[in-house]
Image 1: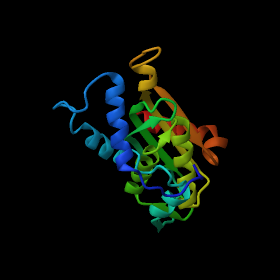
Image 2 (image 1 turned 45 degrees about the vertical axis):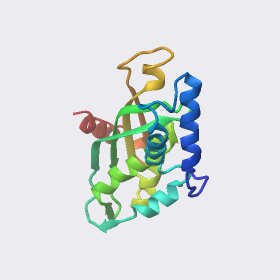
Image 3 (image 1 turned 90 degrees about the vertical axis):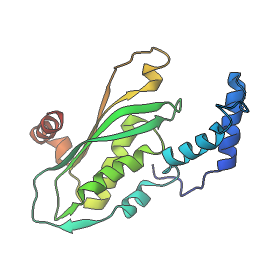
Image 4 (image 1 turned 60 degrees about the vertical axis):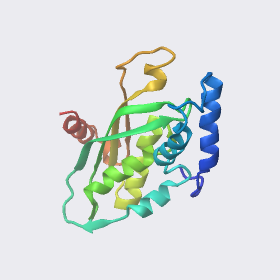
Length: 196
């Protein structure tokens, strides 16, 4: 996601949108249980879409803290829990687990930064496939290593709670580059480690 640039959200419009949605559904936004809902909705959206309009380059700059190393074996942070919203229905993608692996080329990134990158990428309108490629590209920029792989599993409410309604259906995606794309054994080693 390279287009854009930081945009500020319009809280007033978000509150109006929530009020209109409640009315369109046929309920009363002034009743006790819903009176504060537009305000809470706006705050929730501001949090859950905090990285809309922020590019991969900007995310890479924000989390660009690496340390010198002589190690060159695979580094993996696995099963990072995130959630996102699909751009087709604004439906939640949930029970998502992100596993990120890379082979250092003289520098290692702080482990918590890998989790922060995954979290940031999820906080914009997304599809699961692009979450993986966005994380991969950000990791490549920061680590200066082409050898990066991202595995994601998750459930999509656009498929589990509407339409075909198949709860429990899990989508798995892989975004890889360098040795993880070119070498079957290295790719298989990563997948074995993240699935155990």
